[in-house]
Image (tube, rainbow, N blue to C red):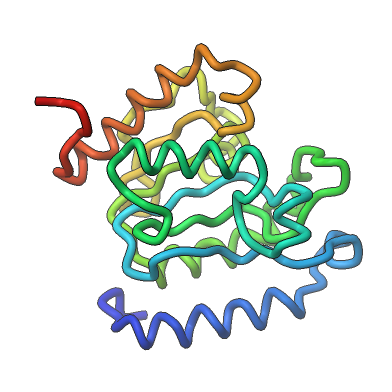
Length: 198
């Protein structure tokens, strides 16, 4: 695929992907979900945030990160001097696991090709992984969010920075300082100004 696609071309690919995901029956989540949650945001985004799976509110609305975790993610993005319409937001899984349980390995394996295609379409300069599950999905079971957050990692030649999932930050507010340091590294890697820094 041509990585320098025009926005109009990206829209066509994303719509095709959405259609394919809506018809997907690779696992049992297809029969328990209300709406698949493909992703949302700027198709020319420099930053792509990747969470683990849609929650209940996301399942209802068909949009990523719209519940309490999503509200916090929006605040984090705004604190970075950006807005949600400047970034792209997706998840490893496209369907809500019942009871907000962790995704099963086979579910992740089934869904990853969709995510990889999204990454190719959006072609962001940096991926920001939110939480342990997203890190394990891309880097394997040896991934540790507590040890590897904030580090510059590479996935298929693309820069990656992992940080804590907003849901974790809601339960562990003290970790917000660490998460902000991670976001400052994201901004630094993109040569963007850090708000409040003179």
